Image 1: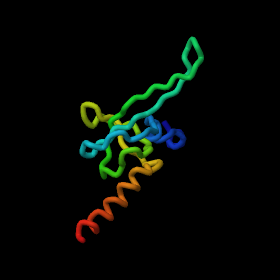
Image 2: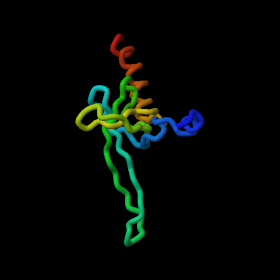
Image 3: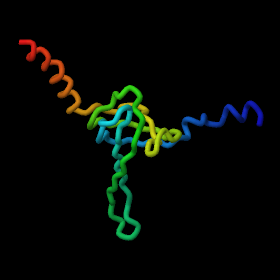
Image 4: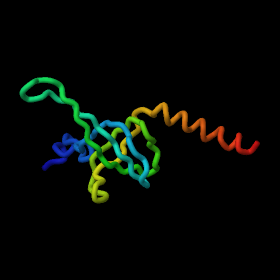
Length: 112
């Protein structure tokens, strides 16, 4: 292969599969469970059928919280079930913002 053809090919990272879903669990260390909803037409009845699947994803900083909408990317196997990593947090949950304000005000009330 020449240098010109190598430049035109996409980098290996962009070929990896990406999914967007909701965080349903953050109880493990550095791991989140993301539920992805898939909608497709039924082959015979042509009605839209909704199905969900859970994916275990690696979250190095433990930054994602319950209810967040996140983008995950396929990666090498990290454990028995973990084959995805957290790419970015698309939208924060409104519940996460309420928890933050409660955590800030709780120590102030306890000090009184």
